[in-house]
Amino acid sequence: MNGITILDGGMGGELARRGASNRNELWSAQALLDAPGVVAQVHRDYIEAGAQIITTNSYSTIPSYLGKLDLAGRYEELTGLAARIAMDAAANVGPSIRVAGSMPPLDESYRADLVPDATAALPIYQRLAAALDPFVDLFLCETMSCAQEAHNAALAALEATAGSKPVWVSWTLAEQPGRGLRSGESVAEAFAQLADLDIAAFLFNCTTPEAIGEGLRQLSTLTDKPIGAYPNRLHIPERWTLDNEVATELLDLSIHQYVTDALNWTELGATLIGGCCGIGPEYIAALDNALQTRTANSQS
Image 1: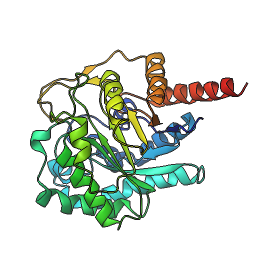
Image 2 (image 1 turned 135 degrees about the horizontal axis):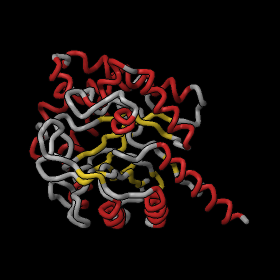
Image 3 (image 1 turned 30 degrees about the vertical axis):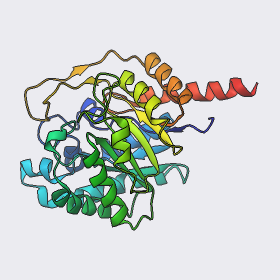
């Protein structure tokens, strides 16, 4: 498909749609305790839709979330469980499906002001990476809201695995196109902060398609390494947290518009494309179909 690798879509929202998760307390980690079979089915559905890389359901298996139910001490165990479930789902298909180990924000998503410093973050990230390592093909430091957060996660993954597996970094951008990361740092500044690390690919996620388009234009001038994106369908207000009363808004992003945007991103050099919050298997299937059609048309 012209060198395009399809990623999966969102996990937490899909689990919620199937009744296995909710925004309160543990979010997507709750399904690992109550409904691991549903997590496995979501992975299988994304693979069936055309995803070539699936991401572990370890976005909320972090001490800050698990601590709400006094489960912080189980974060390595539950991270490993999430990785095993993903590995098993991929193995049932074959070596063509790879597993990305999610390395998420350690406090709240989108909140650069809450990012712990390296002294606090590195030991946790290293243990997360060690728990994921036996089961994953690569590490995905995702929804990174500032340069320091991305550096913390990527450095820990590289150190924990002695650089034996690829490490990808995916930043989340400000809602307004061209405003850089949610921290206010520019894409160029965030990229420069990773200059001392061997990052294998750079992406944007959990961000509006409009912001991603501008971000990719900037990123494509900074690196020859693979770039990509996986957007969400949510507007994220400032100061939002998982537990507060600030409400997110669902964007009117149709499947057709998502596919149109994704194809446009390939023209900007993106080769890694999937979806985040609110982007389910039906979106990924439509993207897969569009890419196959484009390839067939180019060969006819």
